[in-house]
Length: 428
Image (cartoon, rainbow, N blue to C red; front, side, top):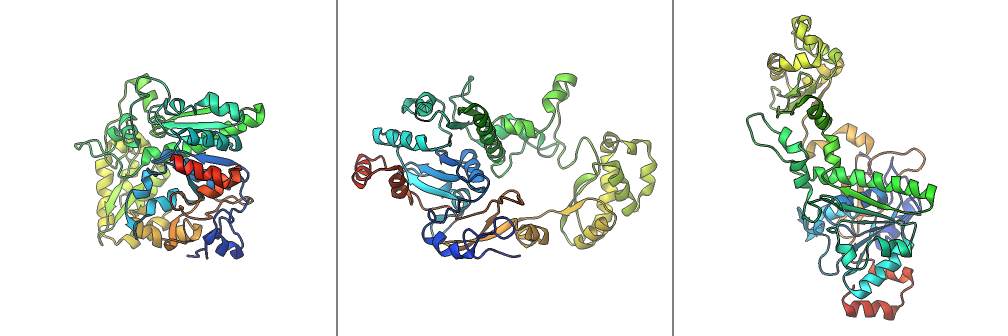
């Protein structure tokens, strides 16, 4: 795998001169390349854990200038989530990449006034306070839009800005439960299953980035900004498919089916002779036929029920036995090669060690290396997609808490005494 030689150089995604590497390490602000399709866009990230901040990261990956605004004494909790190295949270290195970090207590008069000054220079603000919090601080949409009519304010909350649950605290876990995702995940005779990672938050982050760009496109037409109201419970409901439609029209409630699908078969995980797990999917009839010929059960293709996905799903026991018995007699590598030759769909079940070693991920530079002044070389997920003309890139990993406060405020026009006064007030 080809890795970059430092911050700002991610081969295949955002090729940039290595001569900027040293400057990037010592002065991330000076390393801002002014490149990428979102260059010139300024984003204030006021959010925490995880949907809002990740949305800002996605914008920063493609050139937006993102300023992360954190409380002076209560930083974004993601800095302390998960494993740490030398006392430095690793999750933050990913979530905080391409962001300058400053502190500001928005509940203080000085913090409020400074945020309004920042808002006047920004294109986007992303926040995830409970509804009414910004208004209580005198930073609601009327105040923000008054200083910047072109501003887009993205408000990311568990339940949205209105409705009977709007003021409840909430996290992505509640969205995974309330959306129906957990109800259909797990074995038929087992409990509903929650994902061991931030699924709903991540889906909401992708949606938020899309919503922000949609609102900015609207601004190009009208000249005016607007509010994005994003409830984390909603995007995941779209992702789980047509369940509301099925229930509305048929009264059908999708059950838990484990790894099986109610719409096609074979579709499951199977264990090889050397103890590896592999996933097989045969959504199309042509693929299902190839799999049956490969595993030595071509007679099943002639069964009347084999003609449709639903029919095959009703006979999943038969098909799983056929596929599972064949895979159990072969090593995982042999299975993959045989399926590839047969043009049938199979993939090994990876853990992160396999991901880091896989040649396809390496060819895509999916997990890339950057240089970090605190921890040295770091490998993390690259930007989400490749653009041929205006690629994105990772310019630096997450910065220390408040590292760029003085610089950002100086750029805003505050003098040294004014910054000192804000510190004395406790606003910084």
